[in-house]
Length: 99
Image (cartoon, rainbow, N blue to C red; front, side, top):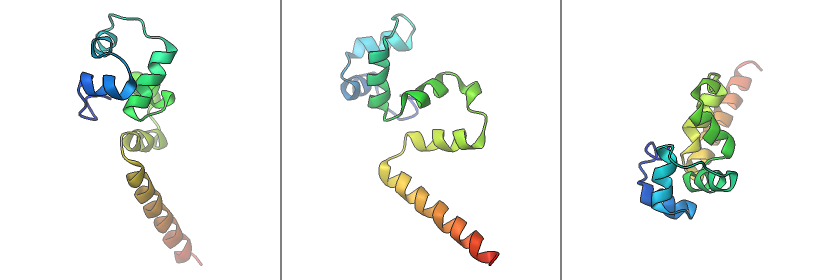
C-alpha cells in the first residue's frame, strides 16, 4: 500500500509517527508488529485497519464492492465526495428512466 501511494518508508514513518527503520523492518517481516503500531501505519496510509488486512490478504477482496473500496482507500476525501456525487447522479438518472 505504501508503494501504491508512492510513499517512501521515511514519509510513512513520519505520517505514522514511527521510526523509518521500524517501517522497513515490518515490511521485511523482521519485526513482530503490535496492534498499536498497525493502527499507526493504517492511519499513516489513510486507510482503516480492515482495508490494511484486506490488502495483506487479497483473497478476501473478491467482491466488486471491496474492489471499489480498495480503489477509493488511497484517494482524498474530495475524490470520495466526487465519486459519491457521480453515483448518486447515475442512480437518480436510472430511477428517472423507469418512472
